[in-house]
Image 1 (cartoon, rainbow, N blue to C red):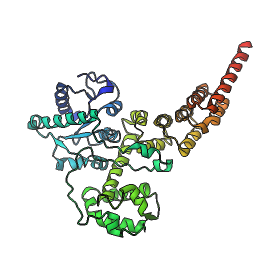
Image 2 (image 1 turned 90 degrees about the vertical axis):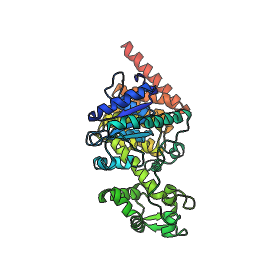
Image 3 (image 1 turned 30 degrees about the horizontal axis):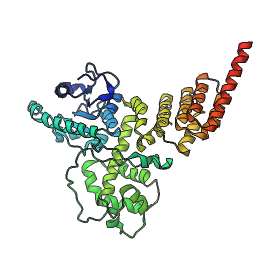
Image 4 (image 1 turned 180 degrees about the horizontal axis):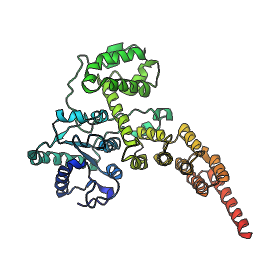
Length: 424
């Protein structure tokens, strides 16, 4: 089926040029089964790859040393992950051969997903039916609304104050059934209760860190290098516990769930899941990403708390185009609180006129009444007409009594100035 309609894509295939033969095989077989598939450089596959990833129901990545290496498909995988796509990894080598090609981010993101192996021509015929069956079932579940995606429920997150949104938990759950865990502690008690006692209400960060590593260190060392383990622990300290020297049980339960009814390894697995989300965002938004611009333009519609946090970080980007696009995307999410609005108000003074224009429009989408006098001030003092027009549009978008009156005054003054010019 042709894939020129980006709104109804079933699948995006991510691949390296070295794996084009397998891509063409999968593309052809899937199309013959009435699936609408998008792949780079395929005829009739229009639009950008970032938009295609976001619009597709399923993301399939052909994993090879080339695709997982530098300049490969890592940024595409990261975008699929944070935009909540079921990911189907198809590997061209056995796992032992592939694992040396996987960087830290790909190990984190793909380690809990069932891989399919196409390592020989024989696999093409024997393995494809199982791929087709899984893909068909997943698409049916998505269309019926019964598929459980990766993203957290957002409504609760968006009600949190901005300081919590910017450090929001990325509680991602595996798209596929987890493999039976090789590791189960003998006790069924939660980590906190088993290590510190159920009645202990707080411990120092130093004690928490030491205990966490004592329990999980050998399992982490099987997967990651020492510096990556330190990064993971620092994520817990900085993002989850917000650099508090004393870790309360309430902080812990806010992230891991109640100790009385949670998985005994809930904190450990949720920390890994949070890290996957965090590092995936880095993969999408770093300066070398080939999907960065599409991501910022489109991800506002997902309203995911971690996406919003990353967009807020991009407001400080050195590239004014990225600051402008991030501002617009945040406005489209509908997220507004005092600190986000305050940050956007500061952007009205940005050195770049596109950023100032974007800040106006974003405040309009937020319908922030606090912004009304600031937007009026922009209209009065801004020397660039496009920015003044954006401030006027924003006042109309806010659509409150205060903004309507301000807009009326702006329009009256605009007409009077026009009449004075015409009379000269």
